[in-house]
Length: 148
Length: 150
Image (cartoon, rainbow over all chains, first blue to last red; front, top):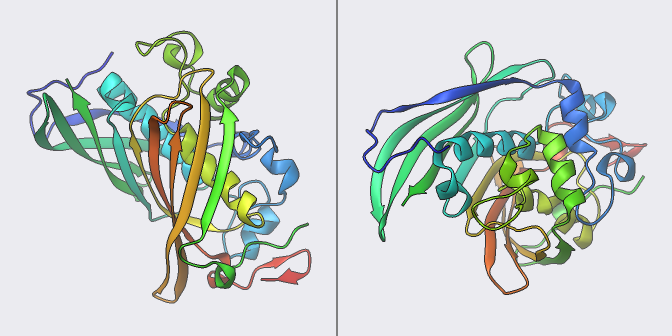
């Protein structure tokens, strides 16, 4: 059920969601079968998401999740808040500013920044971010959805 | 092992795609498993009429688009991503994704590319508009892949 309302207040804090980024989840996402039909991990292995050796070759301490894996979690967060107004009319723009490592506990947070009329709907814009267990922001961005 | 895509070989204005596929139960199910999101809208039924793909599903198509153009992007590092969700991708939809390299630049010594891509359905309706900004791996450290330095 969507939580956003047309008269929601600027400053409203969306209920955060927390998840642990396990090595298994990273591998699962990065070995998915793409629409083109190639399981990534088999066709392209090694890559920085499933091969520690490849990750270290570019200076990373370990494998890292794909940006789009985290992007999908942020979409889930937004879908819970906006419902239909996310699926049709949602926008999300993110900067990946800090590495997320296997074992990190990530919390996705959002704060309402703006309400803007858009046709007959209200577009609600949020500052959104993912922070790790040390409170360090790893992904920052802006997201919005429609309340009709 | 195929040699990895090189920043120097990419030209602004290059078009990538089309990538064409159908939103199948298998694709939705595997994406749901990959991100552990089994909401009813994806698995059973939605207000849009039947099952839909996860909203950011087509955002991941940059991987296939770049592969179709050249060679794998195994260790490029995602810097930024944006998406506009126009319409849901319904089960059975036939999706076409096309993209273009719109910029490449060096910032603080690191090499970036910007790819924009759009997913539409069989009726020409837009599903998503996307932008992918990625950093070339050789700027993090000289990348070696099976003995091949990029």
